[in-house]
Amino acid sequence: MGSIDLSACFPVTLGGGVSVGSLTPGLLIIGQPANHPMCVKGLNFFTVLSGLAASGVLQVSGIRIYTPGEVEAVNGTDARLKCTFQSSSPINADVITVSWSFRPLMQGREESVFHYQQRPYPPLEGIFRKRVMWTGDIMGRDASITIQDVKFIHNGTYICLVKNPPDVHGMVGEIRLHVVTTASFSELLLLALGIGGGIAAVVILLVIFVSCRRCKRRRQRKLEGNEEAPPPRKERKDSTACFWIQNLDQLMGSSH
View (cartoon, one colour):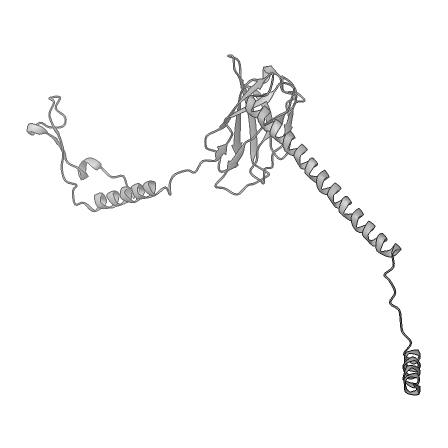
């Protein structure tokens, strides 16, 4: 298919009879499209492309990354940076890559934190050396890492980037880490509730155990008491003796 001259398909003139090549300003008028076979084919082609673009067929789907946004960790503890993703392409463990980088709070250069491609590649130098541990699962669409023994120098923004060819476009995930001296009130409250709930559960179990033991002992005592005190025996009367006693009484009565 050869090139299409759109000027032939759409005649263009300027208002007031001024030609297009004239420098005199005027009103631009676009006429009706010419009924030329090539013009019709070109318009149909552009119409199909516009429809596909509007329906999303031609749109390139990007990988979607999900992060919590902000994470708070107490100085000296471990902080898990959770990063999950969704890809329109099947997960290929041989080509998928995960890259973590760090941007400090103060102005400074961006530093590589972690890289994954078929296996974890922790940093060999810098402030994250021997501190980053892979805690994700590629097939489970989890690209999380854990920073061990966080310090105040680890305050900043962490960037999670996942590429699953051919799905390599999309937004990155960001997590802002706050390293604090002590846990916040909400965390302390949750911790207290957890400890209190554990203690309450232990107390309830002990009460149930002691109650069962007491019931068992009472049953044993009742059984032992029944064995020590046998039931009273009923006197058995000899039917033969009763017969002779009755006959003797009758004989004595008749003699009188």
